Length: 85
Image: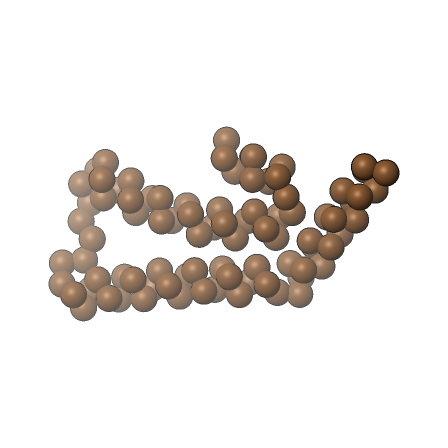
């Protein structure tokens, strides 16, 4: 439901990075809280997990700012303006 609302709310280049970031984060939280999954046992392992998460978020952010995403946003805005005119 939330994904569909996000897709309707704006351009794919805006909604998809948010969804791509929140889905794995929520999966980890649900796994830890609901299913009793354990995160890293040592500080080194925890640092590695956090670094991996940070790299993933940085990659999603970089891709969302790419020239292809900017072009898609511009086309989406043109379509929206054409529909309201």
